[in-house]
Image (cartoon, rainbow, N blue to C red):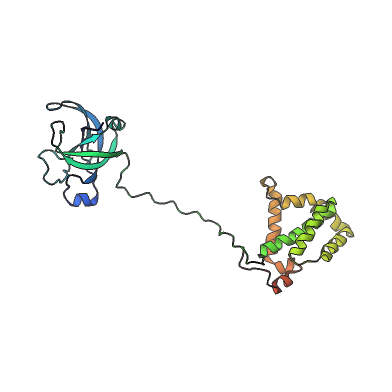
Length: 265
C-alpha cells in the first residue's frame, strides 16, 4: 500500500519547462537528493523517509500551494522501494500534489512513479563510432559471373587436374571438367593439361609435391585449421583477378559473349 509518509528535499532536478513556470497539482516532475530516514514529532510522529538535497536550496514555484518550506517534498511511495535506496543519491519521478492531511508533513508532495539513480534529464550517451564494414557482395547479373568467380573456376580446372594426376581419384577429373565447362573451356583443354604434366617430369613432380590433390583440397577448403593452405589459394585467386586475361585461356571469349559482370564482387 502506498502511504504519503516519505518526505524529500528538492534537489532541484526539474525539466527546463518546469523551471520556466510555476508548477500546479498533477504536473509531472523529478526531484533529486539523498534519501535518508528521519523521525518526525508532533502530528503523525515516527520514522519517515526524507530526501535531502545536495544541491542549492531552491524552492519549487507552485501555484496556490500551502505555506511552508518548499525545498522539501514528501514522497508517496512504497516503503520497501524507498528502503532500497537508503543513503543513495536518487531521482524521484512522479506527479505533484499539495498537503491536505496531518500526516503530510511538507507543503508539496510527490506521487512517485519511479525512483532511479540515473538522471532522467541527462542526454543519452553518444553512440559508439560505427565500425568499418566491408561492402556487401553484389551478385552478378543473371547468366553472368564475377571476375573472382571466373578465376575460382579456373583454379578448379588446374587444381583438380593436378589433383587427379597425383591421386588418380576420378572425383578430381569430374570436378575439373565441370569447372572447365563453366568458363567455356573444352574437355580438350583438360586433356592437354593431363598430357603436358604427365609427360614433363618437372611438372609431374610439382603435381605430386606442390599441388597434389590433397593439398589442393586443403587450399580450397574454408576449414580454419587449414588457414595456411586457404591463404595460398586466396593469393592465387587474387593474382588471377588482377590479370584475368593473362590467367584464364578462355577470358577473351567470356568477355566477348558478355558472360562477365565487372560490377559484381
